[in-house]
Image 1 (cartoon, rainbow, N blue to C red):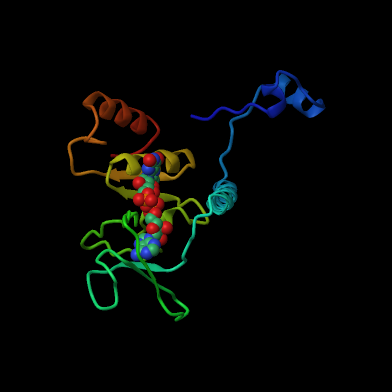
Image 2: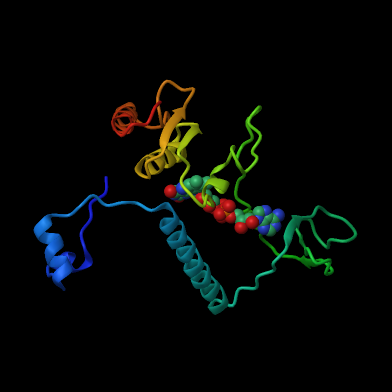
Length: 193
Ligand SMILES: Cc1cc2nc3c(=O)[nH]c(=O)nc-3n(C[C@H](O)[C@H](O)[C@H](O)COP(=O)(O)OP(=O)(O)OC[C@H]3O[C@@H](n4cnc5c(N)ncnc54)[C@H](O)[C@@H]3O)c2cc1C
């Protein structure tokens, strides 16, 4: 899946003796290092986070860091649809009123009976994203887009990967030909389905 080309070779030149030796020898297989990838991911998140923060500030958008709760009509809320913001440190709630409200609270992983997430052996993608090391083997429940994305990545890192999917094919919402090609590719790379 991965090919390696040094930055100097990409620019069409070779900058030093080491690179020349590399070129003479031919390139060796690239190695993926999970810990390095995780560290790079964290730095990208930090940079994006800071960038978005700057954009929000520049656009003069007010941000309240607390738990938003949509209120119905009551003596405390001037109109239905007001938002109360609750703070962890016990600071008094803010009450925000606005003509329009967008609810953008995201989603949570769906729990599966008998597979209680413990953050140790049983993980959702949230915990998997924080893994310090690549596991030696992993069973992925669900062969949808996210399941196969993770399967492909863990296989590239050298883990022994198994996918359990109850539909008769992977990414069952997609075209059958795509499912077949994907399954063939993953199996060729050692993923058990
Ligand atoms: C493993 C994985 C891979 C994915 N890959 C892709 C991909 O390749 N391409 C793609 O398009 N999508 C992908 N998605 C989906 C994508 O991440 C989501 O669709 C997207 O993040 C949803 O955005 P959102 O703003 O609705 O929710 P989120 O990004 O989840 O943001 C919701 C925010 O609301 C906050 N919040 C929740 N409740 C409250 C409350 N009561 N008060 C205040 N704040 C609250 C949360 O803390 C959070 O910060 C992926 C998702 C996962 C899990």
